[in-house]
Image (tube, rainbow, N blue to C red; front, side):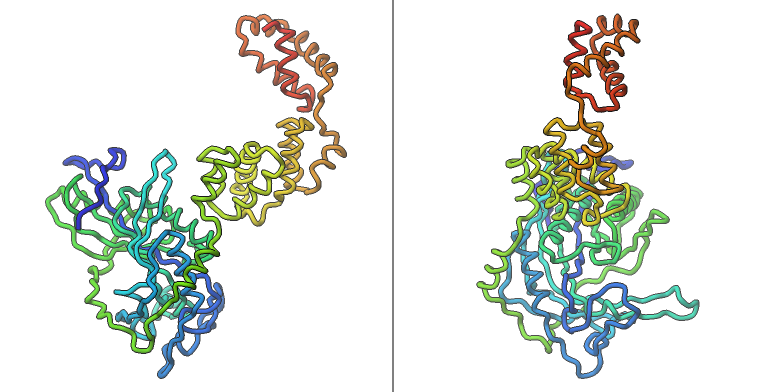
Length: 492
């Protein structure tokens, strides 16, 4: 198989002892489908329940139990395909993928092999430096998750929790279109954002609801693909990047020493900063796929696909373009604001105050910055969109200065209240009386005759005078008026 016709940027090449190498990456994302019940049973998918409390007779593979397909999981897979402009296959089939694990009671996994529900699509990824890459998606198929083996509760025994057994997963298989760890991280971030926008997966990697198998190979630029190794179950975007870098360099060292790469499955150990061999890589024939005799082919009507397409929300790329066009924000700010649907909705509510650019600045720098510092999600923000919009309205009306606005934001964060009422009750209104401002300016100038002479020779020193006046006025003087008065009085 030949690589896509894409010239590698020198910054993405890895320098080895014998020259530059190109890394080739493909990802298999396992996304837990948002559904209250499992793929083939009515058992709950709730997280954090006591071990083996969400297990039906189907999940435990009791004799004679037959699977019943969850229609909602099918609809979520179709919606995911539509969101990446993929082909929806109106007929698909379920197969048995045979392998043994203690936490797989059936001895096989019900999956889709030759006929998945979603065919080829594409994810467009903004790299943040003006470059946009198109990452091909080969397929999205539905399958059931396995249970969980627990090895650290007893030195002599392992335990099995089947709560996850049978939970619906979408496996989203990319083409080998990624050329660096940064591209891979950006791709996962974008795909996660899309899935969260449409509600098909919550993307919670801490709970294992989104995880990746990472396929890595290296080659000299322009050469055919090398032998790939698969790194299983990487559960954070940061670890995905680290695993790619470490595995690529491991392969380069082997090849430059005259060795060969064995196709195998490996595990990433973030504590040791290494990948280690797990088992030789299985091929499709090793799993002995065959059609599941208990499940008929899945047939979907085109009318239902059209209905799901029409009901999709505004997707991240469309929302980003609208924010740039309608609100005049920068492409970078639009990207940050649309990373989460809830954040975008919050910003739009704030922007109703009438100054979208100011709303974007305060939402990103003050609000998001404080939320990140406190480890809070946007839904848990102590400052509501109405409150932040009210604060921005006061700035736009020249009722308060930027410095007072930051003090007001702190009050809103810790105490709450109505911004306008707080300004009045606490005497925070900006001083716009030019006579009062002139008096403060005169006092500062009179107290610093040496600085006055320096400012006449070096006009940029006016900034020092502005700072002194603002300090003397408790931040309440109108900064624009201060600048104009000082320029006049200092003759600069």
